[in-house]
Length: 541
Image (tube, rainbow, N blue to C red; front, side):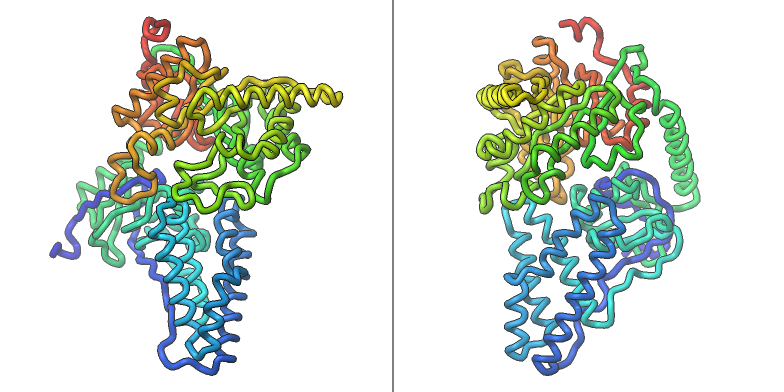
């Protein structure tokens, strides 16, 4: 066994980039059950109902304080607290003389096992949320649920980190987090990236003791426990160098992006939710390369007027820059009650994206009408997700033109916008030149997933999801070449576009348009400035 104070190095997977240095603090679940016999059924039922009420109050407080992303994650747990299908078996067990805590744990453990064994990756990911709710209610049955009193600068160490626990912690005081399990696409990882909290996941059986000094390079997925003086000096120098890079990136934030050999590159931003543009300057980008519209459908299919108002706001914010809006991309890991198909054996290979839109045409036509109306106000572009065969683009274009004609017949101002497609299915990348698209946007996340036949949230398979995999890069090159041949723009969105280490290989593949997370704009422009573009002869060819 390694000596307690000896330097140890561990490798995991990056969930959120950054550097952290501080003492390790193991975050446990806390008390989950009270030993002993059950009280009367009436007392146990009262105890259970009180714990549910306390949990709901705590989650509502967290949701009110969270941003849109955090609140949406917590809504799942809040819905479960009111789900009679989940709760009635617990109440029946209590009425039969079983302890409330034991009944609740047994019911939730059963559900968690079902979620984890599901072929549906979305359901498997939700197991963490169920575990989170299970432990919160159990803790509330045993004296209350409180966040740990943690020292300033601590690095959180845990088997996994649930979303409500993440939102309970004061990350202004903490350095970062390292998880023995977890995944880079879990809700906690998504929250960490959105808040700039360095996080490493999937460390496995790493020997980290309470209070060990941890040096974390979260971008590399590296964790060093009890670093020696030379290692600590090297880590400090690396962190300071990263801070200098951040300063250089900040200086380039509002400057046009150019490669080291002077080729202009477009850097667009992704918009996940309309409120994101409130504190964002359009001067940092060349427009919006991806607007996800799923947030509009979280409460059901929205009316045309509401959609139009959101699209109008995006165009006004962009101040004449192009705005690309993706049509509804539901299904897979984004189920929507009353809209997506329930009970599919594998939703990622089922009715999602454009397949769902063409199946639910009444919802799709409403969105197309709102987009056509907004297109009359500025340079709006419409992007279709999960396109697999050329016939899908033909069908969408026909529906779009019918929507424009219907609006004109009603005396409503509308215009047919540019209609492009996401390239995220290998079949589309291989035959991109055969699709009647006005532009292409490569969705790197799904393209990697479908090319490598591995879900993005599976621990231990990170080596298969690297963006610079030769097969993935070949599909990107083919798509760029198809765009060149047809004279249409090709952009790339997804995690690859936002990661500086991929800028050079993407430029070498001929890509000249990146669509990135707003927080990544400066670092991507810096990476572009230090790379060279594909030669002019190759671009022309």
